Amino acid sequence: MSYDEQDAAMDEFYDQISKELYPEHKEQAIEEFTQEKLKSYYLQNPGVMRPAVEATERPPAKAGGFCCD
Image 1 (spheres, one colour):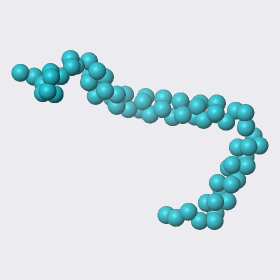
Image 2: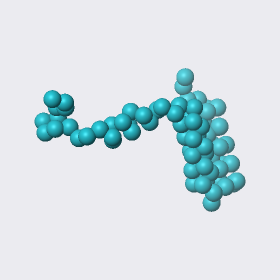
Image 3: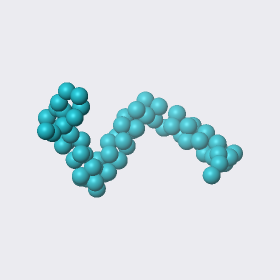
């Protein structure tokens, strides 16, 4: 898949719409879109954070980086 003239034209079109429709609200629109997508992802994949949570609940490793006697 390569980037061609049609892709460039679409990018230019989206840039122009962005400037015309919501220049002052662009950051807010991006933030809301990101929050909605992340919420949807985490609701569909509730266990995705489990390894990170478990890692923070473990006691720190002993000096030398080896665990468990």
